[in-house]
Image 1 (cartoon, helix red, strand yellow):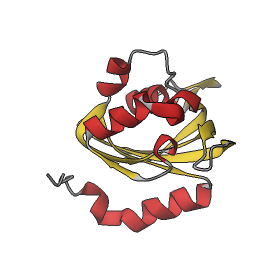
Image 2: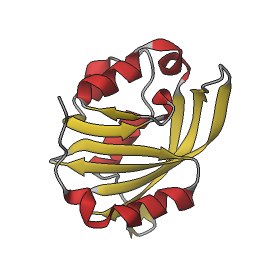
Image 3: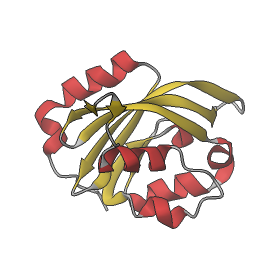
Length: 148
Protein backbone atom coordinates (compact mmCIF):
# COMPACT_ATOMS: atom_id res chain seq x y z
CA UNK A 1 0.00 0.00 0.00
CA UNK A 2 1.20 3.49 -0.72
CA UNK A 3 0.33 6.96 0.45
CA UNK A 4 0.40 9.55 -2.32
CA UNK A 5 2.82 7.49 -4.42
CA UNK A 6 5.27 6.83 -1.58
CA UNK A 7 6.05 3.12 -0.99
CA UNK A 8 4.72 1.76 2.29
CA UNK A 9 7.25 1.11 5.02
CA UNK A 10 8.38 -2.53 5.19
CA UNK A 11 6.64 -4.66 7.78
CA UNK A 12 8.43 -6.14 10.78
CA UNK A 13 8.29 -9.56 9.09
CA UNK A 14 9.77 -8.19 5.88
CA UNK A 15 12.62 -6.52 7.76
CA UNK A 16 13.34 -9.80 9.57
CA UNK A 17 13.24 -11.81 6.33
CA UNK A 18 15.59 -9.38 4.60
CA UNK A 19 18.01 -9.42 7.54
CA UNK A 20 18.00 -13.21 7.64
CA UNK A 21 18.46 -13.89 3.92
CA UNK A 22 20.88 -11.03 3.24
CA UNK A 23 23.15 -11.78 6.20
CA UNK A 24 26.87 -11.53 5.61
CA UNK A 25 29.59 -13.81 7.00
CA UNK A 26 31.17 -10.93 8.95
CA UNK A 27 27.87 -9.95 10.57
CA UNK A 28 27.51 -11.08 14.21
CA UNK A 29 25.48 -14.28 14.11
CA UNK A 30 23.76 -13.35 17.36
CA UNK A 31 21.74 -10.86 15.26
CA UNK A 32 20.45 -13.75 13.16
CA UNK A 33 19.90 -16.07 16.08
CA UNK A 34 17.47 -13.61 17.66
CA UNK A 35 15.24 -13.90 14.55
CA UNK A 36 14.91 -17.70 14.64
CA UNK A 37 12.51 -19.87 16.65
CA UNK A 38 14.09 -22.63 18.75
CA UNK A 39 11.86 -25.06 16.83
CA UNK A 40 12.54 -23.72 13.35
CA UNK A 41 12.84 -25.99 10.33
CA UNK A 42 14.52 -24.72 7.19
CA UNK A 43 15.67 -25.82 3.75
CA UNK A 44 18.39 -23.36 2.85
CA UNK A 45 20.90 -23.03 0.03
CA UNK A 46 23.77 -23.21 2.56
CA UNK A 47 22.56 -26.74 3.38
CA UNK A 48 21.93 -27.73 -0.26
CA UNK A 49 18.19 -27.58 0.51
CA UNK A 50 18.44 -30.41 3.05
CA UNK A 51 16.12 -30.08 6.05
CA UNK A 52 17.67 -28.40 9.08
CA UNK A 53 15.78 -28.82 12.36
CA UNK A 54 16.20 -26.54 15.34
CA UNK A 55 17.94 -23.24 15.85
CA UNK A 56 21.26 -24.91 16.72
CA UNK A 57 21.45 -26.85 13.43
CA UNK A 58 20.42 -23.79 11.41
CA UNK A 59 22.99 -21.55 13.08
CA UNK A 60 25.68 -24.20 12.50
CA UNK A 61 24.93 -24.21 8.77
CA UNK A 62 25.01 -20.41 8.63
CA UNK A 63 28.37 -20.08 10.33
CA UNK A 64 30.49 -23.06 9.31
CA UNK A 65 32.14 -24.28 6.15
CA UNK A 66 32.54 -23.34 2.54
CA UNK A 67 28.77 -23.04 2.04
CA UNK A 68 28.49 -20.35 4.71
CA UNK A 69 31.50 -18.48 3.35
CA UNK A 70 30.23 -18.51 -0.25
CA UNK A 71 26.65 -17.51 0.46
CA UNK A 72 25.37 -14.04 -0.31
CA UNK A 73 21.91 -12.82 -1.27
CA UNK A 74 19.97 -9.72 -2.19
CA UNK A 75 16.24 -9.56 -1.55
CA UNK A 76 14.36 -7.79 -4.34
CA UNK A 77 10.80 -7.90 -3.00
CA UNK A 78 8.51 -9.48 -0.41
CA UNK A 79 4.85 -10.38 -0.78
CA UNK A 80 2.70 -11.19 2.25
CA UNK A 81 0.72 -14.37 1.58
CA UNK A 82 -1.08 -14.30 4.93
CA UNK A 83 -0.54 -12.70 8.35
CA UNK A 84 2.53 -14.81 9.12
CA UNK A 85 3.88 -15.89 5.72
CA UNK A 86 5.99 -14.04 3.18
CA UNK A 87 7.06 -14.93 -0.33
CA UNK A 88 10.53 -13.40 -0.62
CA UNK A 89 12.24 -13.01 -3.99
CA UNK A 90 15.84 -12.21 -4.76
CA UNK A 91 19.14 -13.47 -6.08
CA UNK A 92 21.70 -15.61 -4.29
CA UNK A 93 25.23 -16.87 -4.75
CA UNK A 94 25.88 -20.21 -3.08
CA UNK A 95 28.20 -23.20 -3.04
CA UNK A 96 26.99 -26.17 -5.05
CA UNK A 97 27.38 -29.76 -3.90
CA UNK A 98 29.88 -30.54 -6.67
CA UNK A 99 32.28 -27.84 -5.47
CA UNK A 100 31.13 -25.13 -7.84
CA UNK A 101 29.35 -21.85 -7.31
CA UNK A 102 25.73 -21.22 -8.21
CA UNK A 103 24.13 -17.85 -8.83
CA UNK A 104 20.43 -17.66 -9.51
CA UNK A 105 17.10 -16.10 -8.80
CA UNK A 106 15.63 -17.58 -5.63
CA UNK A 107 12.29 -17.47 -3.86
CA UNK A 108 11.97 -18.13 -0.15
CA UNK A 109 8.78 -19.10 1.59
CA UNK A 110 9.15 -17.70 5.11
CA UNK A 111 6.69 -18.52 7.89
CA UNK A 112 6.74 -16.75 11.23
CA UNK A 113 5.31 -17.74 14.62
CA UNK A 114 5.26 -15.37 17.57
CA UNK A 115 7.33 -12.92 15.54
CA UNK A 116 10.17 -15.41 14.95
CA UNK A 117 11.19 -17.17 11.75
CA UNK A 118 9.71 -20.64 12.13
CA UNK A 119 9.99 -22.09 8.61
CA UNK A 120 12.09 -21.00 5.65
CA UNK A 121 12.37 -22.87 2.42
CA UNK A 122 14.30 -21.87 -0.70
CA UNK A 123 13.07 -22.53 -4.24
CA UNK A 124 14.59 -21.89 -7.64
CA UNK A 125 11.23 -20.99 -9.18
CA UNK A 126 8.37 -18.79 -8.06
CA UNK A 127 5.84 -21.40 -9.18
CA UNK A 128 7.38 -24.03 -6.88
CA UNK A 129 7.31 -21.63 -3.91
CA UNK A 130 3.66 -20.72 -4.50
CA UNK A 131 2.71 -24.39 -4.97
CA UNK A 132 4.42 -25.29 -1.66
CA UNK A 133 2.42 -22.58 0.08
CA UNK A 134 -0.84 -23.91 -1.34
CA UNK A 135 0.07 -27.52 -0.53
CA UNK A 136 0.94 -26.71 3.08
CA UNK A 137 -2.59 -25.45 3.74
CA UNK A 138 -3.72 -26.22 7.28
CA UNK A 139 -0.49 -28.10 8.07
CA UNK A 140 1.40 -24.79 8.11
CA UNK A 141 -0.23 -23.78 11.39
CA UNK A 142 0.66 -26.98 13.27
CA UNK A 143 3.34 -26.55 15.94
CA UNK A 144 6.80 -27.81 15.16
CA UNK A 145 7.96 -30.94 16.96
CA UNK A 146 11.64 -31.73 17.20
CA UNK A 147 12.73 -35.31 17.52
CA UNK A 148 15.44 -35.91 20.14
